[in-house]
Image 1 (tube, rainbow, N blue to C red):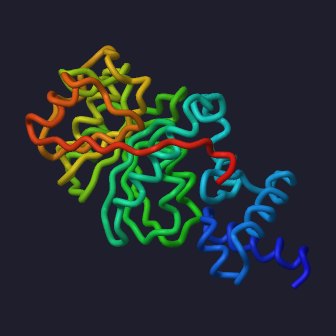
Image 2 (cartoon, one colour):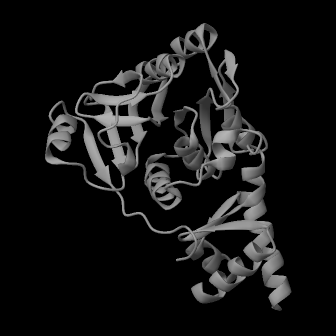
Length: 261
């Protein structure tokens, strides 16, 4: 197999699956991990994909959301967000019904779910766009008023639609986390998140360590036994106690730079 043939096959695989990890590509094409890394580096240089720790994703999946400022400009804590997103995606099993709220953290999770057969409910236009041409995911979009800066639907119609559904899992972000619980900036977003939590059997919050000790406009929810908080660094003892005392789960993941494995 020539190098060009190898590159074409890997590119085709990633176009079909939107994301692929190093080990999957190595097995699929019977090549070494080092050969996969070199191929992905070459495809990234051509602007065809974006490298992450352990794999790569199709650049086109990002372009769907370029019109929304929050994804186009937010590269902060990229490695941490990817590590958290990976840990959450591993907990999502095929056949689940999953609620995804808007924001960069949940969008990062969504990108890693495109290969799984799921039913997804979301108020995020970027996430809905991402899943739009993925045959394995059935996407249900809530109604509501468009909060354009974030590309999310909020308001009474959004909340009413969430009241009528049931999900196995809700995956949410937040602006801050304190001993009182998880906080967010916008009252309409908080109201929608509360409906999502009520509709799901279990809720997972994606919160990197920069959110520790930060309050925002409104408290989304106090900690509950149906909650899991996934973060990249262990918070202080008081916050750990506040999370775990009511039965919530704290899960840590090791963040690495998304450029190379």
